[in-house]
Length: 472
Image (cartoon, rainbow, N blue to C red; front, side, top):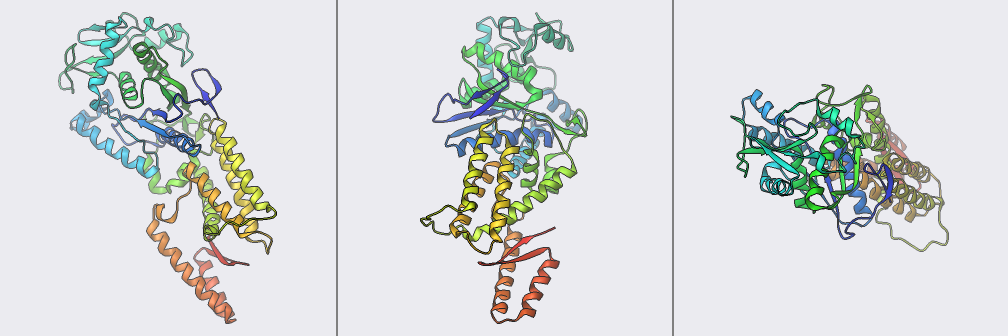
């Protein structure tokens, strides 16, 4: 299994620090508003990495932080006339609701304001080492004391300096230095510290929360590509000067989601909220669309792509619904292996090969739908397909689809209760139709078939009885 490591800019063999439990940290949102689909792509990639490692037999612990104190929160709260803590709580809860519906919840969602003591301890260690300095109650990190600064973003010192001059702060010893603690301002939230009341800078939050919940060295750190510099670069500088150990072994950066070729973002005012998208399309459809391209490639979010995903998942769902009745089929010793069983094994191998190649979900989906085509051919075959082959196909497909989160059982679907009632009614009508066919009452049989067709339910008569699927 290989992962593209942004630190080395190479594909590297995945070797976890502790085979007993893989640690993953994902940069979460600043909770001053609802998250948009672009944020959700990074969360989804993180979730699939976690699921796939579980599929491979690893135990995984995933932490995704919530930044609940920040300039954006303070500014937005002021505009709305509420306290920053009230605003952060409201949107923090909304984020967790969206994450649950989208299937991207982490094992732990640490909040910045609940880890102030850990941040203060890290800052004090850096001060003791002479890597940081205090100016008027604020604490800055001395970038020139970390010789490897820039190793993640692969930026030259002069580029870093030019970027730092965008915001000039005369109190800094070096324009590249960044704040870890901000002295309190009137009316803003603040906490006691050895340097006076204040609040943490953005970068120190992730270092403190990641190390508290996952240890001093992470296996995998996931973030959007826009966070590579300066945020992730600063995380490395802070953490490694404290521990003298690598902060993360593998850095995974997710490419931007775009609209009409332009990066989606709130600053660009071209974003679509995740909760709005989830009200328009089922979770599985959005997940399918967002992983239809490998995570390091930009993806354009558009209606055409969503409709293609919706059509593809309808085809997948119909196939699995048709296979479902074979799930309890007892495996028997076969003297020969059927073409369908060969196809099942090929799908498993191709799926694993794709995901082992830096989580290539696009190729993994291709392997899944190749098997769906073979299953559909086999279901309409007159004979020659052992029933156990259908059972194997059902189990293999549901297993890999759960890894990607693109298929749910009826009870798990957004409208699970309605779907279940629909399925029971259709099953009852098929029983009545089968009884009519056994009595050679072709008029009743055809009437049921034609009426269901008007309701977009297509009946297929096979050697094992009638099956049905939803058609558009």
